[in-house]
Image (cartoon, rainbow, N blue to C red):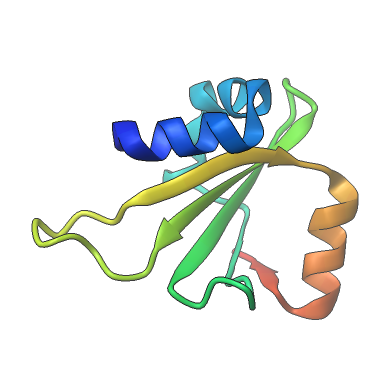
Length: 96
């Protein structure tokens, strides 16, 4: 996650972003749900339930990789079970 993306996520989500930092790699490598927000068609979302922390982590990424072939994380923040269930119900995300 670039410094710019970290600054954006911290500015937008504050301490909630900091709670997610230890779980970013695990969320990206082994998500439990994934999907695409209808508001952000240039990206996708990876979600993972973090049982020991008691929340889900959402990692937003761009669809197109950088010139170096790296997919860029644009934000990360916790979401609740209700939001996960709502996104599953609407088809916004799916289980993987």
